[in-house]
Length: 471
Image (cartoon, rainbow, N blue to C red; front, side, top):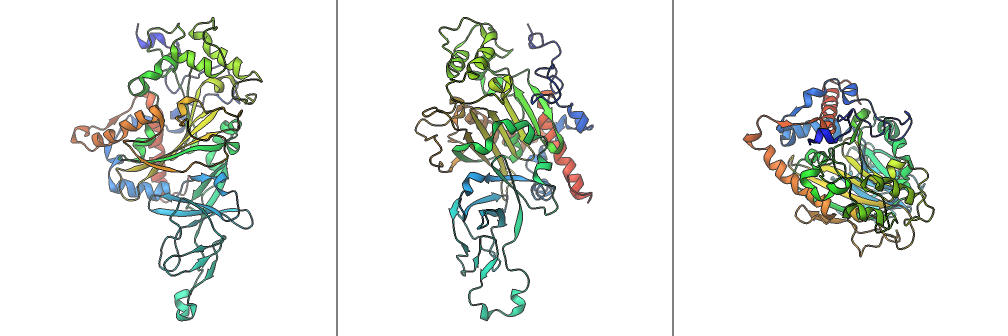
């Protein structure tokens, strides 16, 4: 039997809805097809490899995307006290994000206005002011210049203009702080729409970080990003997931500004599996994690999803969570929303995996891949689901923030699944620069989210380069 015969009769990537009976306002409601937003969609069935390694294309992206888009700088929870700050590096730029004496959060370029030395070098800190380590100029938490050391030896013309730190746009959503270098950019919530409504029930503003890892990878930021924009790779890269993941019949959603989502059904065997009836060990594990004894379970594989949903809706569920705001699908399935250009989630009520892809400062063939694991308050002693890769010795209570780890692609310390994803990235980059790839990257209909990424990049390049305004 072919895979096509195993799928739902009306399944087609990008068109098929996981549940076609849902009302328009339901969180799982299917978006219009990709061509409704990008009529030129089929121009992206092949992609020029140069987009991943050409320094000129990297410069165009910097000017059109990174300097004009809202990008996630960090978490509000790292700015609890007045004077708390964190550093955010984006390409060759660096920002200080700080909570001021008035409790407002602001972002400033991390540059002393004297000779350009960066003011902070650590990831996190708390200060009453910022003192340049070169010549001791001082700046307040609101960015104003408080001291020019030996001011009497400067001619007036040398100190003309505003001596304060240069601000960047800074706004927050769901506990995340976003920064934008474009003073004329639209408000953050307008830019993000409809993602805030789609993700509101996860209450990520109430979650705390239990893992924070940044991995240096020898690939372009888009290679890293694209690894999480399609489930087509699951059967080859993550074959151990197939007994409990439908990697084929996924719902693909496309939204304005390059945002999107994939909904992947879990707790059901892949259509690629020969046996889709038995309760295999992976399904048994998922039952047990939800509080259902698999040895006493009398159903087959098709009954597992409903059993998990029913168990989670029990007030005495293992996680101690209130699932009333979540739909049935959210209790079992992987929601994989992404925010253009470089933020993505694997969202579950019990934990959210946040992934951020940052371009290298100077090299188109390198990037930084950041992963944060967020968890809500749960019953004492309960740990995040095992697939999130949080080590057993890590405190998940929220009492202390974990240290940020800087790892390399050979030892990412992100759990088996992400390690498998990372194992592809550098070797994809190596292939992209080969003459053997001269005909370009070829994309299937299961990779429409990758097509959307490139279509949105080109849309923004055209806006910036034709002077037509901002997205």
